[in-house]
Length: 293
Image 1 (cartoon, rainbow, N blue to C red):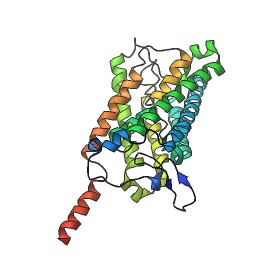
Image 2 (image 1 turned 90 degrees about the vertical axis):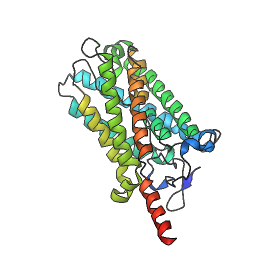
Image 3 (image 1 turned 180 degrees about the horizontal axis):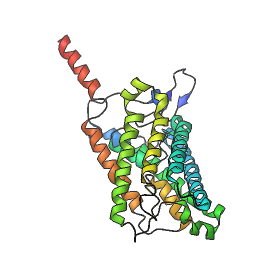
């Protein structure tokens, strides 16, 4: 359910454990693991707050994917050889801006990979996660159609929709999958640590979370851009991937842009479940109870 902000004047639809909305998040440790809670799987499907958030998430993901595709086409048009720095700075500013803009309304994921990971971490209920992923994917598809329309068929095909492609003669699908998986895992470890770990908020304050996640995206994409000719670097956002695939009509090896993030999500979630950020709080509470007894 939505939560009131610090002033009690507004209601925050993006208030749940996997949200980037800072102090509005619900961070109460559960006694029973999420995978043993029936409510985690069955509740929330008809909650108007979740569906309202999904509409905003759909539009935000569409806008972000569209701008990202335009930027890719612009870089190709300029023909600049040193694109890694531009890509890193652009993605850092783009992602952090959209997280700041949408966190209070939707949680600020704008990426199916982030949502899927938080579901596996027990931070986003299955109902909200499923609905958000569907909305993000739809947003990506809408962005692809609009990008195709604004560029025109010939220009969109010429620029491969603006990104998310590789030449299989220079880098194999397996190599691309490894790169995508490791890039996704790196981004998720940084995103969870910088944006979702409650200890981070205590040390640095919740306002820095979205900026640090954006910078993490910039680092990951900058590092992977240009490692091999004919490879645009890690996508780490399946919604953006489907947008650029629709715009450029290139579906060969499209599975790489989905399987890589999925594998990265499962690895990151395994680490999180093994050592969740709230475990120190639970241990402290246990020690206090023991000392009182």
